[in-house]
Length: 375
Ligand code: NDP
Image (cartoon, rainbow, N blue to C red; front, side, top):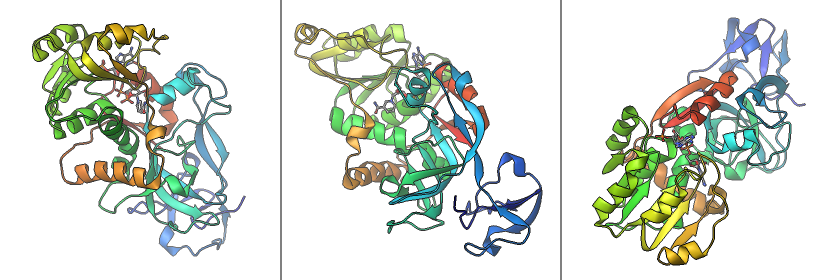
């Protein structure tokens, strides 16, 4: 494996992490005195007494199961191939899909390192990459193996992070931000005046979705399981925040009995029937997740009986299909954050080594907003 120009350490000494985030973080076994900053290093030169850093720490699962299958192990630092770059991860975003992958609900190949969303700094550029250079700050929701200190990723799916944007914020936004964006623009196009039902209003997607729905002029009914979560959902702009069992009467009251224009349902098994019942004639149910479990097969006659209903089951990958589409969605989301129109809540940060605890918290309904893993 080829060492890169920022991957050197001396036994017992760590290279100081530059405050700009330009230098790779030192690994857990490298705690020690500071010898010099990365700015002193020359490309592809070894400092006397130093050896190339070849390994890193990553999360690896060797089988499907509970959070305990997520082990923190030493692995080789990957080298970028054609069209790829190596990124030193500053923060990785935790997303519910990783619990489906870990548990076996979504099949994966083993050994498996979860993580499609992260932000960090380019540390090596592979052949054929023209648009990125070492030191660029980047983020993506479309990577792989992101629960790691270093990842290799296709340059085409990386967006540059403006200097003014913190890398943790950049890691918190792409996946859930672009999801909320496509849900309201492309799965069901929300119009001003629509009444919309969502769930988990204090969740990662939920907080962003509510704020974007309000930007579009919709009336938002949402749910949350605790008072703290209800307060957060309300502060995000939701018009009605209720317990799950209060949904039918709230929908009836707010819509005068006619039902909502659309439901965005990321809870799945426990809420699906209630979501169908909440729709008005020709309403749309966007089932975008299964936090409570997957929805069983649906009898299409149910849509006829419910009033010519539409049900769609989208996923983000089908809504980030071209450079233009990526630029549109991520550009809008970043722009709204920069203009102060939407707020991003980072509800918890876990050391990467504790990824299993982060999964427990997410599945245990203990988190709000975005959860980050820090290498
Ligand atoms: P959240 O932060 O929203 O966490 C999940 C929340 O769901 C919990 O905090 C809890 O909120 C609520 N919930 C209700 N019932 C359960 C249950 N039985 N077990 C666990 N949680 C439950 O997660 P994310 O924002 O990361 O994801 C939300 C949903 O969006 C997920 O289903 C995910 O798969 C989906 N998703 C889909 C995408 C797509 O493109 N299709 C992309 C991104 C996410 P409370 O306690 O308030 O009820």
